[in-house]
Length: 269
Ligand SMILES: [Zn+2]
Image 1 (cartoon, rainbow, N blue to C red):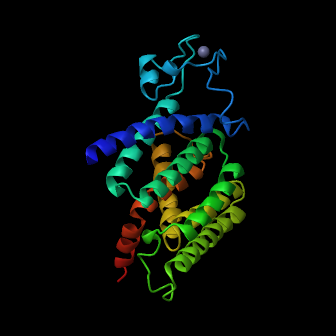
Image 2 (spheres, rainbow, N blue to C red):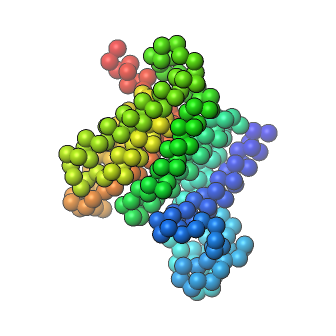
Image 3 (cartoon, protein in one colour):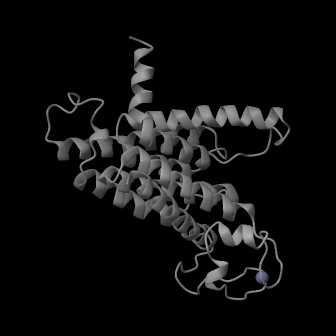
């Protein structure tokens, strides 16, 4: 039974990944997500259902448009494959729970933010603002024990709904402040997009897990920057956007944030 469920959600993830690719292509250009139906960017021909089977069409057609032979970016395949894999893994990790639903929602959002920031060095307000509203609603309405497991006493014995709301808002404010300072000090390096995104992350993961996400992103960014400079894939002066690191660190935090925080706190006890 469980294996069937994981397979079903992996396939569903591939289909959702295909939709995330549409979001990645169209949101920065301000185009509608639903109309027109998918078409080839090069020859403008509308794509048929058989051209749109996630993962398989890409491989079957040797990553080219069936009609004009224009190459498709690897990104299309990578987004579909990683969304599929993450859906499967999260299903295995959480089972069919509310936490599973909430986590895949956020993962989809952060995949889209990650790829758009890589492509355009841009974190779109029209993604961050509405998702921040959803995140606040989820904090208030959805029981999310992980937001409270770490410090049940820190919230002064409040009822869960109040504790989650406080945790979310405190997380949002903390994220905002943590990145606002570097954004002001190092002008040009970090933008207000990153600051607003950090506030969204705080709302999504709560306090104190927002620290894991933000510092995780800094550590990840530091290691990868050194690696890219050492391997000469990038020059020292090339700007590297911060949004992708924030996205990756947030996804890890959503699943393992409490364990990471516990581990870190034990280092000092
Ligand atoms: Zn074409």
